[in-house]
Length: 230
Length: 230
DNA sequence: GATCTCATGTTTGTGAATTAACAATTTAAC
DNA sequence: GTTAAATTGTTAATTCACAAACATGAGATC
Image (cartoon, rainbow over all chains, first blue to last red; front, side):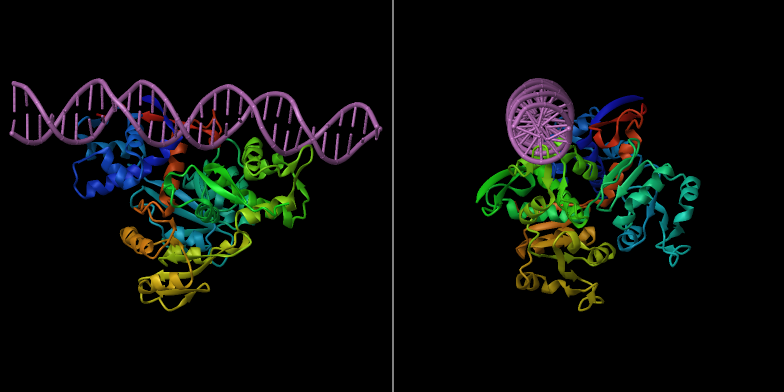
């Protein structure tokens, strides 16, 4: 067993590659080239080859990559051969939508428990997932050995609930609130900030000269400073 | 009116700054330092000062930044003084949740039209937003002068619907499907890949040595290559 | 009014990520 | 069996992002 350093940027692309490899496998394709992959996942072909090369030689020069070999490798690397259970905290509109989201299909992830403070819905089962009251959080996470949670509570409750999660031994939080959470160093937070994404998109559209450069490649945008700014 | 080059990374942080400035304003705080901002938005204080400096001097040495001045500046820069209308295509679970999501509160964004292929819901109003059939997409976008859309259709329909949107003159797409869309250079796509985010989080947790480095700062992760890999 | 403290703005260095380009090597074709 | 076509793996160069550190200047204190 050897350890290899994988750049952060590469790690983020792995699930993307994995998903398309699954598609190719289902379509019974035997081989694939970096150029073809590039077309599908919209990542430069040189970047793909560079990414794969971190794992050692996986392809054949002049031929391409064997879909099955590659798929099996990624399956192991991404731990797709075993199911990962996660919890969801906050069953509002967004939380409910995520309960119905099919994480299991391509990625082997399942939401196996949900928590909410609303006594109206606790004790019920929504989309096949039991909703527990917040008071049972620590015990349930412990019993079910869950250390990854999706956070979809209202902003004002975010930090408070986070502290609860940290104390319950959670190691990773997928944060859908618009607050940046304070957590100890051994807990990882991945932010999914919906309003931010949309706002950023709008900003790029407003300040980017559509004629000159392709949007996906723009490294900087132009901004008009209004002259009357005191 | 002068043009300034803003790095992509900086532009992505602007909505974050703006949101916290709003919070400070509501709390009737008069001044704020880069260190205090840093604490709240979890961005290095030097990075914040660097970001602000792209816009010219906005603060006072030895004092900090005036909250009102800064807020007004960002309001103009991010076009928060006028309302931006966007459309949503695909009113499934996720789409429905986004209709209820309050983009308007902090960011001046409103979903003013939604589209779906299901005749059961077209013609109705959901969460205050009218649902139109797909056939009316071109006309409605034109009438309402909307050129930004949120895409929440099932994966198999994604590219087809995208082509429709592009033909309707859409300039920006917030893509919630797990496909990477093919669009012409003058259309910008912002991907929000939920399964990917969760998978990446899990990968980092599995391959990252919790004791040694804080998660948020990790640039690379360690990976165990299984020895039996042929 | 002089001194001291504090926080900005900017310079500078470092490390990461991307991409172009090419040599190496395998398959396919004739 | 030889040649041509194709595609990987890697080197190198460029661009980008981040963060440390310091000098400058504003305001507070006595």
